[in-house]
Length: 303
Image 1 (cartoon, rainbow, N blue to C red):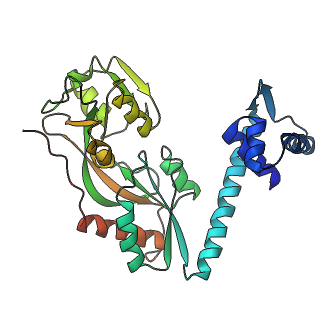
Image 2 (spheres, rainbow, N blue to C red):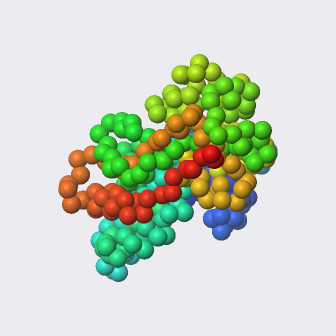
């Protein structure tokens, strides 16, 4: 276990001194632990570049194993502790692409009254690989935009949303009634993924209009995209519901895309083949009921 924790600390910090501080041991003690691990394995794990430790292939494989082991152990610990308090299930919930939890406190309060034996743990890592997390069992339910469903997953519809252009308030098009593909041609377009997905902007704007932004940068993080847009360093097309709290302070402006807008559904996705009374299904149905009773405010374009 000590060696697994060591690998994770080095991954998170990249330097021996910082990793030692995380583990609350001295750098010399961590050096000894690293050498011991390499001696037992018979392979070198890291290359040193100045103060930075660069993992080789063996270290990367072991670190991935360590992440799975430690996450599983922590989850088991939470389950054991919760069982003493009458909790029989702990479900890990994530939101794909966006870490948007502005709605969550109200839902949790409602859900706990209905299901006191189920506890919800929030998983914020891996938002860009939700199906991988589900398939591996690292999360139990993911809330996702879009209507494609790979593999044997199952989905419950939650609510309808709209993809909107996200601009800084001083952008020349910030007051437009709506934008078309041609309006993005001269823009630096910021995206969280270069993978084209059915139902999103490439499929419904770039391809039909036979246009592309002159520059498309994969930032990988929606939060980072929003900060760059605030600074006037690009534009994007993103979920209105997920970004609604960010629009509230006026630092970002939503604008409709196409005259009729780009509608997009949000769904709760779980692994297929679960029993009808499985806690994952109960959570999915509860989300469906809650959003039906508390529908998100839709985007209202200026007239």
